[in-house]
Length: 211
Image 1 (cartoon, one colour):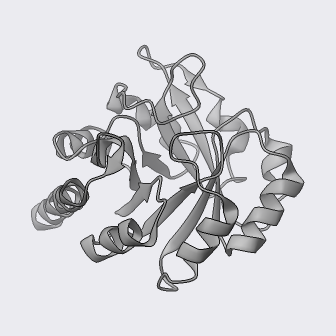
Image 2 (cartoon, rainbow, N blue to C red):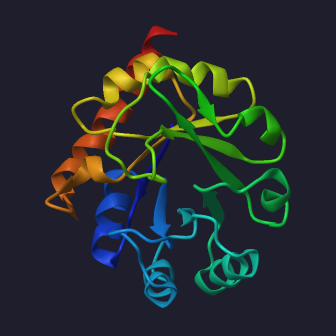
């Protein structure tokens, strides 16, 4: 189970997440309270273990800008949260994660079928008008089954240490992504990060035992 802690802004938080067992760290380069400047991200990333996935999060950014930041920061993966179409996603050599927004009644935006075989994975997030992610709100987790038809799914949207076990049981995704759910007053909380990952591993271990 891939575990990604998103919204990393400093090396201390990065180290806490890695020590707790995170597989991937997300660096937000789009307008957000969690936004990090490329040069700052570069300084954090250069200190990370080589096997940690370094994911850059973008929203409707210029292709040239994404390429420049990816090269500067040595990103391993690109995550797109806006209206990036298939042609856009095909412009990059690095693996792409495309966010799919899920409404309360199960509608998907954009249609994941268009991206089948094009992106490495889909990130299932909560649909909210005028928001591109990081809403802290959940959606009906069972709707992930539809997205799975077209590729691997990373579950996001309102996850926290308190609901991740239930979410995994309902969605059974390939990976999970959390940001606001491991924060306290807008800052990453080391205890919440550790508890979140512990709950993921507990669920994962129980699945292995029952198989």
